[in-house]
Image 1 (tube, rainbow, N blue to C red):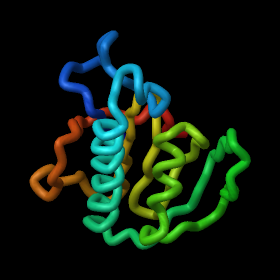
Image 2 (cartoon, rainbow, N blue to C red):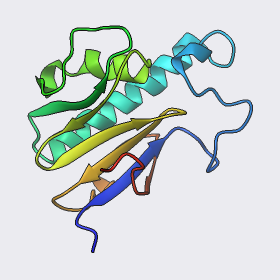
Image 3 (tube, rainbow, N blue to C red):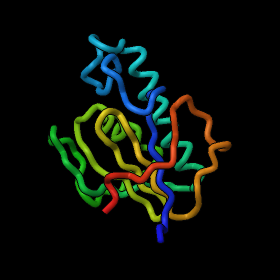
Length: 144
């Protein structure tokens, strides 16, 4: 029996990104303007912070780190939510990949600008979340 609630967050109107959709920070200038990219990136960060506040999470542990640019993050580092925005931007801009874990929540980040939220306490009430992003029940492919 499943002991968690899992959600996929994305920016797409249709279930799968189409050929004209931007899927990466590196699409700025070709498929997306910097302004539109930053709007979406900020929505993801706001959602992360809102869900963390809903669950009263104050910090996360970095796990499963893949540090492509050799940035100053390490497996096992704890980062407080008030300081987490630069790390989230680095993840969303594909400078590194990791899972962010607390005792109640996990955040995973996938290809094509997907984010996964895993809750161990209770389901997320969508009425408590104000976002333009699409949130759907979906098992994270990064659960282990």
